Length: 406
Image (cartoon, rainbow, N blue to C red):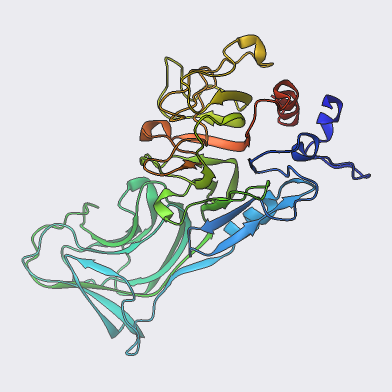
């Protein structure tokens, strides 16, 4: 059996692919980013694109996760905002703070502009905001600053964080096109803001009304994030899902596949939910490939362990693991005790929380969850459960480790 390990999840000119579920059948739950069953015709995951919340199934390429399709999906150009400040247009989501914005103005030989009006006696900040995600944006904006201003000397487009400034202009009495591209990692809004002579965002007390104008304001992104809404169960039994966007684990950042599913939401029980049934006294064997990146547990060190292919064997009615002897694990990793009816299923050195946990108040397991949110910060590539302790644990584990080069 073990000799076939090199073919697991791989293909060559002669397709001899045999998945783990073909060699070791009978899994009750089987989540993986790679293909586990040669006869499985479904996808690996369903993902949500953050830029416009569109969703798409992502499958496999040569029996491995189709990262190219995922990255093509999250790098499609998306128009976050295109201004229309004509008489028939409007602000279309631009918020106002310390300024009054009106449309359909003509200035400097151009029409259909938006005017930012800051009244006399105002002091402090004056800006407009547009909500944005943590993505890479390209921005173009035409700006006109009258020379009659005394306090307002510059106009900048930024997120409120100095390192995330798209462009700034101080040219007077003519239209200037400012452009820039910024990877937004801290801000949550894009600002158009008036600056004082000193460059400060806080204007001095205005002695008279002051204004500036913008038009052709356009924001696009070609590198967004993606989150998993469904991790398909390749055994065909219990898909793991999450409809709430704030609770979905991440799989791509700024248009790039992470190589795993990552949960860093810091919310209790936030991740993918599976209806895999909780059955008292049901013995099981679970195999996990992942990495704990949150708080250290049971005296371990966080964020230093590699991805492990680890077997866990236990009994849902007891408080101890079926395998406590480190010699049972080919990679030298021991298993911690099981607590609270599978509330944690922790691996002591690998620092993993598993997908298996009895959901509070219901007879089901949570995928990728633990009752304390600090332990939810984990990365996963694969998780398989057998509802028995007769599966050849050593062979399955060795097969997994060979596939992932562990």
